[in-house]
Amino acid sequence: MSDPLIVVCPHCHAPNRVPAEKLSAGGVCGKCKRALFDGHPVELDEASFDKHIGRNEIPVLVDFWAPWCGPCRMMAPAFAQAASLLEPQVRLAKLNTEDHQGIAARLGIRSIPTMILFKGGREIARQSGAMDAGSIVRWVRAAL
Image 1 (cartoon, helix red, strand yellow):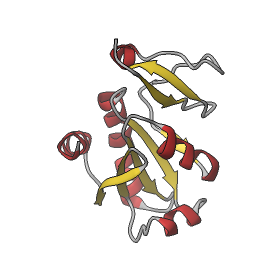
Image 2 (cartoon, rainbow, N blue to C red; image 1 turned 180 degrees about the vertical axis):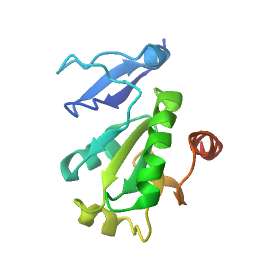
Image 3 (tube, rainbow, N blue to C red; image 1 turned 60 degrees about the horizontal axis):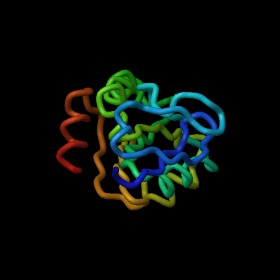
Image 4 (cartoon, rainbow, N blue to C red; image 1 turned 60 degrees about the vertical axis):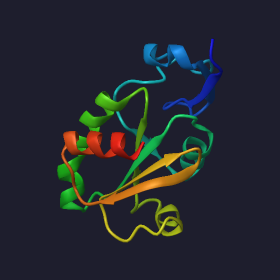
């Protein structure tokens, strides 16, 4: 039996221990009793961003976007589709840079959409520009 991984709940943002060999089975949050993986990106805010990046022991891919951005709106369905293909090995999340400018500035987001892949709380890859679901999945798998 392998060591458990910490997976942050996409709903209540509580950390959960999940045995690595049972990760593909998903799991339920010990606090809110909702699914830890539902095939949809998690909407992050100032409070939940650091929890998901710092506590998740699975990689986290964040799409930095804004509602007024045409390419961001065009990529949103592809990003959602990529979530259904990459979970539970990777958590996909979205952060609205218009509402959370401090995080965007801290990470040096200069254009949107920009995706950053985090692992172990650190940035390991960055990609700017809209992509289709297949390209997102290939880019993430290549980066890992």
